[in-house]
Length: 267
Ligand SMILES: NC(=O)c1ccc[n+]([C@@H]2O[C@H](COP(=O)([O-])OP(=O)(O)OC[C@H]3O[C@@H](n4cnc5c(N)ncnc54)[C@H](OP(=O)(O)O)[C@@H]3O)[C@@H](O)[C@H]2O)c1
Image (cartoon, rainbow, N blue to C red):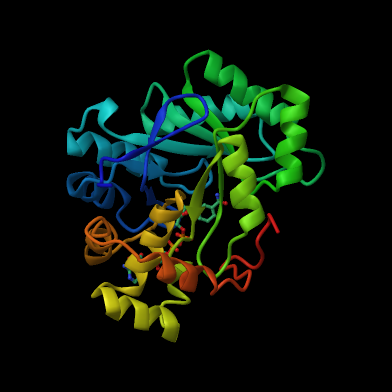
């Protein structure tokens, strides 16, 4: 596996195995994106409500990278007209299409069927290659599929050794839905965990790198955010080592349903 590796979505299209998160990447969005693309980040994750889309647009322009050399994920909000949101997001991004657009979170009531239909229309019109959901439980995904007949390509959820679910992992595998892991570094809140530090030392890597590598080997796609250049680089240096199977289990056993955001919406 290397930085150009991909996973195959249930639509047959490919998606990179790591992406840069951009929530609160607001200090110098354009500069960070330009740098990240130069470092080789193959994917960028944003959302209509992050306030980073214009900076991402500027960073992409400055980098001079061609459109087919990076993968762009954005999201629509649960209280919006999703089709209109797609257009607004693309305008801010200065792009003709996104690679993947997600429903950011399920609406307070219902399953988001209308939101999903807006995204299906956007996909049919070529405004996005693929569509998916975020923060959806298994039941909500099943209801959405039953209502519309369209299986999401991705479920983007908070996902770390400290907070994950075998049930969700096996469900997504059975539906060929790829899990994108958000807050994969625990927002730096669990990096001092003694077991994690001990294992990181064993591999001569940092705790953050181990958290990201655990994702890669599980087949889930981490989206680490980093403002600092050293972190940007460090988070890509995860393709030159392999966690032994026993150590994957040790990491997975750290599960305490931990969430940096408060709670995991899928357990
Ligand atoms: N779909 C959703 O509802 C949802 C929710 C939350 C997040 N997300 C997405 O997932 C992305 C990542 O999640 P996140 O931003 O919440 O948290 P995160 O990526 O787990 O953590 C980011 C924090 O970790 C620090 N960090 C990064 N690399 C590090 C390293 N190698 N060593 C030590 N610290 C490091 C960063 O510091 P510096 O910034 O100072 O470098 C920042 O404070 C978001 O940016 C967003 O794109 C989606």
